[in-house]
Amino acid sequence: MGRNYGVKPPPRVVIHAPGNLADLRSAAEAHANDMRESAEEPIRWADWNVLITTGGVAPDGGAGALRVIQFGGNPIGLLQHEHFSNQFPVGLRTTVGSTVHEPDGLSDEQSALIKQLVDTCIELGEAEQTVLHRTFPGQSGTWQPLLVTADSDPIAAIYKPVYGASEVWYFPRESIKIAEVVCQVAFTQWHREAPDIFPSAPNWTSNQRWMTAGQQVKFGELSRRIEDSKTRIASAEREIADAEAAIEGVRRDASTSEQRLLTADGDELVSAVTAALTELKFEVVDLDADTPEGKPKIGDLEVSHPDFPDWKIMAEVKGKTKGAALNDLFALQTHRRVYEQTRPTLSGVWYLVNAERRKPDPGSRPVPLESATDEIDTFAEDHGLVIDTRDLFQLVKSVQLQLISERVAAEALIEQYGRFKLPVGQTPNV
Image (cartoon, rainbow, N blue to C red):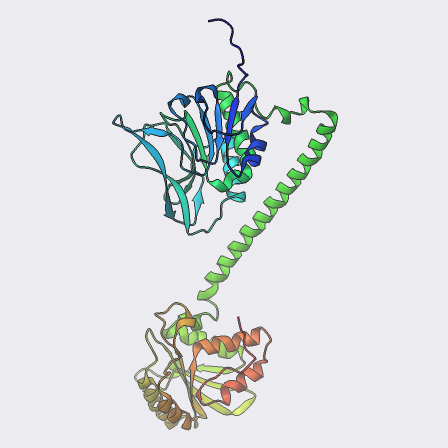
């Protein structure tokens, strides 16, 4: 064959991106020796090496050697069925899931690209993601996910069609923000695979050997700023990791802290109530421990306060999977009568209850004995007090936050009968 005329050296690049032409032109011009800014007919696809597009174009059978970088839109090309001669398109579908993952096997350049994609373009925490979908299994080696959901559905991928293109790098539409980085990585890989079509590495301008003196000085300054920023980011990430670990430790502390007032029952709840009252400067005696075996039960706790020497009460502590029980109030009065047969007369009795424990969130639990207004009024006439352990938790927290004093908190308990109410305006609102 004789000489060829009018043939421009590769790579020859077509851009087709209505509405985003400027973004893709900027990304492509560093790599193209010839560039066309539309894929509208007429076009002979065999004359072109690369298509960079946002979709809406379908190269024909003459585009068998075409490489594609696509940002959104219907995926270009047909795949070959794994076992039959059928060809099928790559589709898109919506999947549920809020986390994304980098699959194994990516090159260092691809991994850095995906990190920038996630940091810059992907809305983490979204309930839904648009993913690539193959109707049938394709031939092996034709499918390389770059970013996947928790169910391994690809958000971005490289695949090799048998019609319409030889290779497609597919990214979601929002990845246009990093189009220059995508092109840099793709053209670098293509240079390694086909140096006759992509004769120079697209990153030669980053080689200081070929920079002007002014470029090299500026390059050094910017490189140092980047390294400093990376150091600060790494330090911040360590601080975040340490803080998250500490937060998890705070959550685990629930088993030994005042939060037992919200979670425990039995002896553990009695212990939690004892600790809370002691922090409010009450003096607490374990009546179960003081009652000889075989003797009638006289309640769980005896509570007094050094600043109120004539005041002493007996307390019953209950943890309930369901709601509080009226029978507990009646039993408490029986225990009081047994107590007063051998001990000084009481100033009153307390019924402390952690009710509806089957509901994990304390805020969703109803008020104990909410509908038993008459019974609680009768209980109050005999100096009885019903205390929701959630309120005792808030009362102790108010003292710890220095919203009220220990004495004010103690007086709030000592002076009330019926249903205990937290001091208005003196308890935490968060």
